[in-house]
Each structure stands twice: as structure tokens, then as C-alpha cells.
Length: 124
Figure 1 (spheres, rainbow, N blue to C red):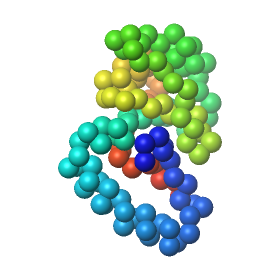
Figure 2: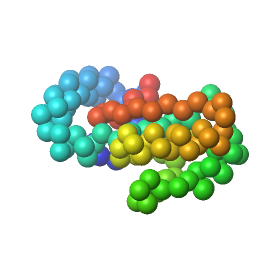
Figure 3: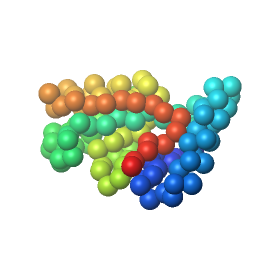
């Protein structure tokens, strides 16, 4: 699952979806008992709440001048989730929260979502 950010379940067969649904509780239980593995596959995602519209220009300027957390975290290109490019992936909560603070400072009123999950985001 590492590196898989989204599954387009709208293109899956009913049988494939049912198999996946049976797998997820087993996968979650495995990760609960193997925190080293969980750390590899539980990224933090930050989503800009732009209601499907374009990102504000100031947002793009803020990410271009983003100061690295501890000097070792660069902001990657947005993660494309079903054609939308307003999500970013981080390894830790601290990195994601720092990115939110920085971009909100340059974009007053912009709302951002942060989440972590040990399974890909599902789209139906």
C-alpha cells in the first residue's frame, strides 16, 4: 500500500470491491500489531478546501517559499487524487501541521483538512 494514495473503486467489479472490503480489517489489525510497518504506510495528507476550484495564487506563492521543517522536509508536488491537485502528502503530523500553518498565514480564510489513514482514499 506504500505510495498508493487513492483507489478508484468506481472502476472495480463488485467482486473485487468485496474482496478489498474483507482485506481492510485484516490489514488494519496487522498494522496495529506492527507499528514499524504502519509508520511506512500511514502518511498524513493535507487537502485544500477549494470546493473543486483552483488554488489561490497566494497558496502557490506560499508553497514556493515554504521553509523546510528542520531543514529536511521539502514540499512535494501535489498528490493527484482523481484529477484534483490540491492535496499534499507528509510523513509526520508535525510536518503536515507546519505546512498548514505556513500556507494559512499567506491565505487568510483558506481552510485545510489533515488526515492520516493506513488505507488508500477510496473514490466511488
